[in-house]
Length: 156
Image (cartoon, rainbow, N blue to C red; front, top):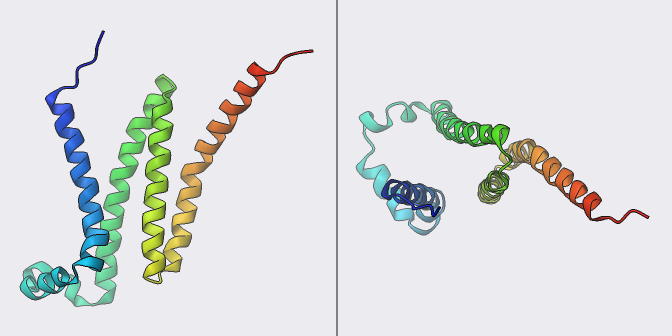
């Protein structure tokens, strides 16, 4: 039976790409290649309505950033919980690959920007989280490699 991709699946795939490219745009393109957009944003939208809490000082700005980071981590965590639950039903190698690629992509991008901005503490934080994610992935791959090696060895 041939699987036909629905219009909704294609639309969701497009939305995923839009989200990914928006992240690249906001994290890399705007601050480093279009700094004028940051200036425009600050001058045109610098009002009490939009920046009331942020303009109260550095502590409030950090609280805002932690809330933003927390929201992103909650979203990624929910996604990981949903797709890893599938592994309790059936071993799906694509799940392991998807998690590996997304974790490494996040780590590299976030850590390079953190180093460029002098936030070395964030790189340490990233290393801890990368280790947490990669430990079961490395263990899974080692276990599979060991099993396949034993199946292929010839008994004497």
